[in-house]
Image (spheres, rainbow, N blue to C red):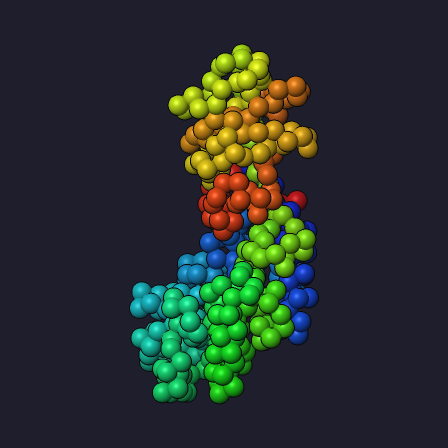
Length: 342
C-alpha cells in the first residue's frame, strides 16, 4: 500500500452512525445499503464492521455485488431483482432478489426459487409493482420475506408525498402475508417511528452523508481524502497556476502540487473552491483540478515534497461548495486510492 493518495476511513464513525440510525429506528431492525461497493468505501470491509456491530440486513444493487460479499451469516437483498441473465448466479448465491416487475415474479415463481423480497411502487414511478397488480393477486402463493417501497422525497421532511407513500404502503401491509415491511432510507428514518415499519434501510448517512437537517449533528464523517505533495514551488506575485492559468497569485506565494485529481474522484468542480488541511490549518485549492494533480496555496506553512495533506471530509459542506451531490462525491471515489481503515 504505497499509492500517492489514500482514503482514511473511520471504522468507529461508520459503526456509530449505524448505531445512531438503529436507535432512531426504534423497534424496527436497521439494515444497511452497501451497493456501489459500500458507496465507494469498500463493501466487504463495511459489511464486516457493521455485521460485527449487529447489523444483519444488507442491500446491494446487483447479483455480482451479492456474490462478492460471500457471507452466509447475514441477509443480502439484491435491489434490482432477477433478470433472466441473473438466474444461474441466483441459484448459487445466498441472497434474495427484490422483485419489482410481474415478469420477474413469474420468472422467480416458475424457477421454484423460494423466498424473495418485493418492491411496490407507492408514487416514485421508478421500480416496483403496482398496488393494482398486488390487489389482483400477483403475489398470491409467493414466499415474500420483505415487502418494501422507496421514498421519493424523504430529505424534504415536510413534503406531503412522504405521508401518502407511507399510508399507501401501510394499506398494502395490512393485507400482505410478507414477514416484514420496509420503507425508510436514511432521511426516512428521521421522519419518525411511523415510517420505520419492521426494517429500515439507511445508505448515505452510514458513510457520513447528511441528507436532511434532522440528521445534522448526529452523523459523523467517515471518509477523508489524503494526498502526497509531489512538488513545492514558489510562485511570484502575478504568477498563474494550472490549466488556462485561471488562478493569479496576489502576492509571492508557495504552492503545493498534489498527487490527486478528477481521475481519483476529486471533482473538477472543486477548482478554486475546495479546501485542504495542513495539520488542521485550512488551505485553498487553487486553479483547475486536473486529471491527476491538484494545487493548493500553502504560503507560510512548513510543508514540502513527500508530506501528506488532507481534504474536506464534511460531505454536506463539500457538496455545497462543489454543487455535486453527496452521493456522487462518495460513489465517484476512484480505485487508485489506498483505502486505509482506522
